Image 1 (cartoon, rainbow, N blue to C red):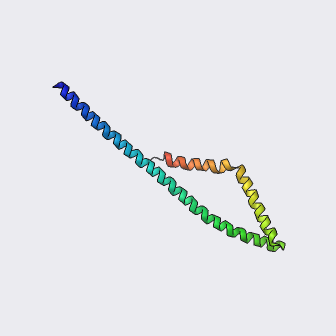
Image 2: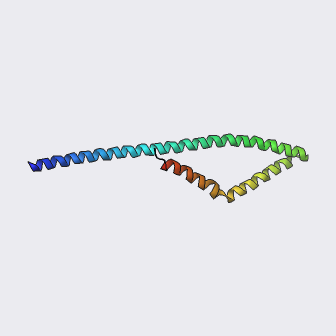
Image 3: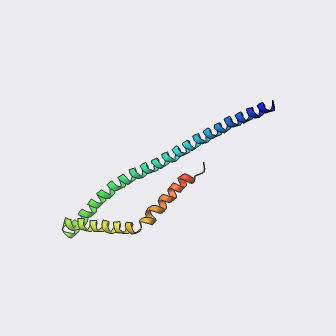
Amino acid sequence: MAFEEVRENIEDLKAQGEEVFNANVKYYKLLAFKLFMQTNAMVAKVLLLGALLLMVLFFFSFAASFAIGEALGNYGYGFLIVGAFYLLLAFIVYKMRNKIVDGPLLSNFSKILLKDD
């Protein structure tokens, strides 16, 4: 009789253990989905904003090139000066790429992953 009770308790314990395990699996799947969607939403926002800012920069660059070219009497010089400015800017960004990209990226993803709900 005591053996049957122990056997039933073990079977109940096994069933409860499976329920806890399945609940944990569902929780971590949901957590992974949430993190994946937050990351995708942030990437989509950055891409959209970046595309719009690139269009603005494109038109401002043309306007600056034509204005400088008009002032110098040769449109080619205006485009050359604006191109040299962007080349200098690219060199500066390349030299500071770790501070500009890695720090903010790590910070933003740490906030997402370590946020308490």
